[in-house]
Image 1 (spheres, rainbow, N blue to C red):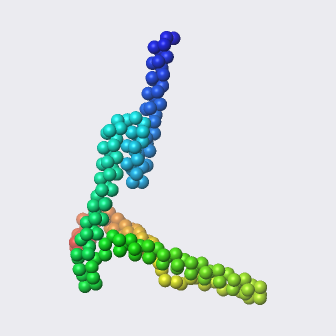
Image 2 (image 1 turned 90 degrees about the horizontal axis):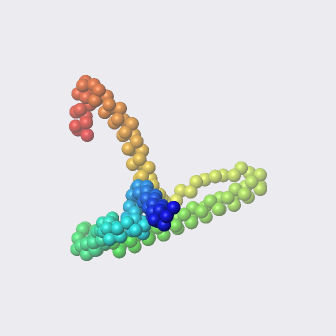
Length: 193
């Protein structure tokens, strides 16, 4: 074996490692893209030595442009919102909306503290009832729903509405597609709604 052969083998091994690395990066790209982190892939490729200048352009396209668009939207919203007057006053800008987000979160935390206190008091009362030989009484907390709970209720409502609509609409659609009579009967209702 000559020096040239060993150098060639070392280069081939290095190239094989590099190819495996890029294969892993490409596999990770699918997962990262689903998570909304597709901009990480060009950074990984640049770190692995794949055309850093081209990867910087890709990072700009995948991360820089969206961030710039969001910042531009916030600036336009913040500057135009006070100028739009309604019967209730001016439309709130980003700062006022963020302030209310913090207030709603604080309200949620207060409500959860109240719920925890309610259940702690109930546990104490039930321990006393059991010590006195009485049956414990369990009640559920009935405090006002928080913003997060209302959001969750809306998500569940939309999901079950979609599920119910799918369970009704898909069989009706199949029936209308397979039968001209069923299509003639259902078509006026479909056109109205």
